[in-house]
Image (cartoon, rainbow, N blue to C red; front, side, top):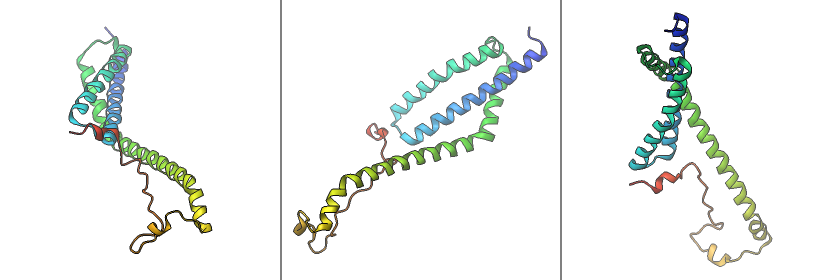
Length: 164
């Protein structure tokens, strides 16, 4: 039997466990919104989430009260989840979404710089007056400079391969 202080520490550890489960769920939710997988991949990812979260919960409960499942353990985890989703979840989702867009913008900028570097000799040659295929490119109704599509790293994701 744990003392009252030990039970309070165990209760706060279970609240912390609920907060950790909520954080892991938001990370998983951000991943799913970025990838947008098909139904069967989504079900597989759900199973993988629970396979990864269950040992973490077990280790935290083992550290809190030797993994004894008592009534206050369920209350503490539910309270931790409630507190996390009420206070922190919106900020975490906002941060993860901004981070995803920032990383996408970074890689898009790198791609544009590499493309500009690769096309630099052709632009230099075009400025001198040598323009291969100029009769084709300068037809009426066409642009004098061919369009280069923008690289959109944020718009493509591997989940589109599995969409049903």
